[in-house]
Image (cartoon, rainbow over all chains, first blue to last red; front, side, top):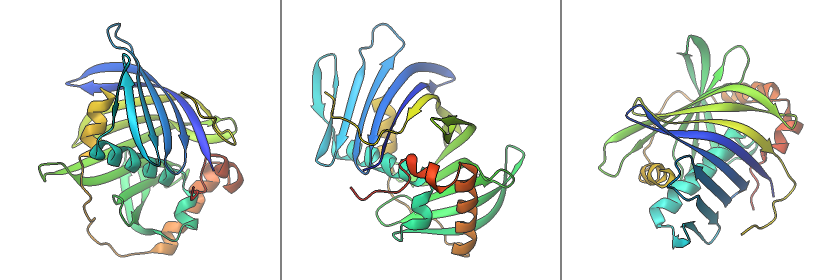
Length: 198
Length: 54
């Protein structure tokens, strides 16, 4: 089983206002994830979310609740996105279909687009820098609960080495053109396995 | 806050991308170049990149 851990400084953005927090997360593919969100405001207690093969739960201020099906679906989709980000799956896993979709200029750089499709998952468009080859953007088109189309865009930048593995360290997330989240990975490790914790 | 965003994202429904001219081999060449840019397959494997089945 492959896994990694990360620490990040993140912020949700609402009407231009940032709500910073620190994230510490453990990922154990394909379905294990634990995340602790520590918010910067002094009123908020840390939020812990756990996802496993059987379901998921979250706890805050000593109050726990099971996650709803739509919340679990979102978290599992996020796990799939992390796996797609790992790239080797795209050339090794026959259940994932890829196709070239042409060039696109992103932040004044020429990029090459790849469409990724897999049954029961959202389609994704990945863009790679035409010169360096590094991944710079992810696009996901989906429909919100009211049926309106929504465009999620993830911009990846500032690639750095974490324990000899090169990864993007900065992510900025937009929904329909509005910045909703940005985060900076400060540490990343790749243990052989992750011990069960709390 | 995290729960809010997760709820928003989790509310999305799957939609089919419009079809485009498929070029699997070109796509895989781009991906292999990216894997090389990230340090090569062996280092990329450390990143949980094998899409393990469980």
